[in-house]
Image (cartoon, rainbow, N blue to C red; front, side, top):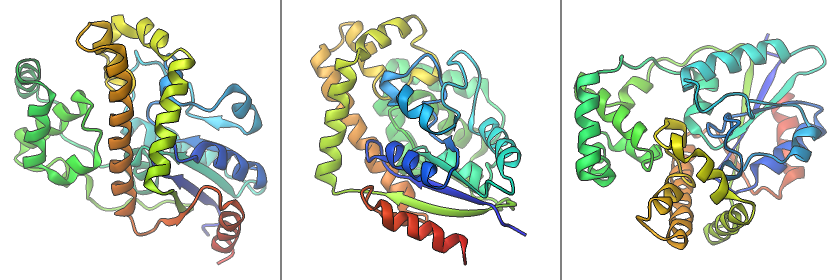
Length: 303
């Protein structure tokens, strides 16, 4: 029987997932698996909004600082690791485990399984890399939007490596990248309770702006400078890092970089909300409805 429950706490960046999930896990005497693909990497902390050292001590966390940006780590590997960890941690005394983050692809991999996509095609990849260098990222974005609008709406379109990978699959197979991710759902030996958080858009955008300002005050510029020699690594092709790389190269000012981080974070939040809203299994709450969420979880596990 499926007597174990994976409780997913999803939602857009800066909505308050981390602090709420820690309180929920404390209440249910549980542990937390991170499904934030940027928080895996130990070299980057400020720009990824990881839980603080104090927060990490309150509840056991997994997949925080678990890997290096210099390692190959992808969603397929994460699925295997997460499922293995769940098997090892569900027990007679621990029936509930929390999974939280904003990376919808990684959450879906744990809940439904990740579909295998075709092998790399180096010829097409090189051609796309040349187009990126010559025509810029907006050209690749427009190409993917035409070929695979479904995936374009869901992905981090500011990440050139993910754009290249999606286009590479489309061009090498003649099929959309999203079509490889709609196969049969894998059977899991635990039940899944899906909760998503949201707040009014203007409040969310204010939180995003405040968070970016705090990141800068806490030393984001210095963290990015340390990583500059490795700026082409895929893990660093992400909001908060690529904008400051451009400022370091004097392509834009530092203030323009900060403004761009805020703008790109807002765009990312919109895409996250689009992704989670497509999944009708999510029950939506405000992050301050803690008691309602606790009661909802209790009701679901007693059904």
